[in-house]
Length: 300
Image 1: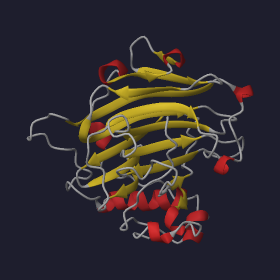
Image 2: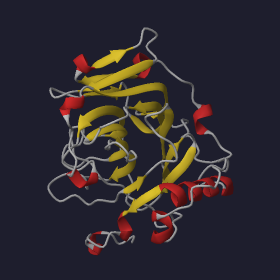
Image 3: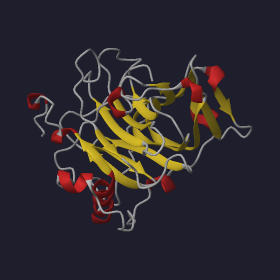
């Protein structure tokens, strides 16, 4: 991903637990069902139906049935792709499997952005799997920029990070962003791990992207561990592309996908599932970071 994105805007109403609990959650509690499965409402599509290569074509391999995509990163380049159409809202998901072993500095991302349309003042919604060193878990970082908060030298970082309840390198799991005019919900296998609804909200058209790139400056332990190309190539596999929403130019009758059976907000069952995910897996929340300038974060 060309820009060094690191942050996520968080709703004040987000369900959170005390820091000591978040950093030392119990592992035994079973995963609850969210009771609502947005991925089942969107059909799986071939990559070529909805996406095209954006950069690093020599590091991108498409399966014969065009449903599975492999991205490679080596010393020379990473690779990325982009949706063919832009959207005003929608559901954007893909099943992703990352590489085991030493992957420090490697960023495998699935995200929405309008950086090409609004350079220097863009919006962005990210899900990033940040590589690691053997014996340590991958980190899922969620991320939102609104009208340029991720541009320039002074980034306003609003990160929330997770050590997921499974190994992202062991199998495919479905990562999705549900973005409608009222809220943004980040989903992992249909479990909402985060919901955002606030005054600063991305409401301009965006495209969906995916990529693998070298984020050694910050991705793993703040840049302490960097990409080691003795382990190249680094591989990210994408399949199960599910994309549906109101494209730019769609008629006014186009309706965005609801985040819950009620339409907006999360159901009590979804809230329980999100509480479980945050309780068990959240490892960083920017409002608990005392090194940040609180004047930049009124929601904290």
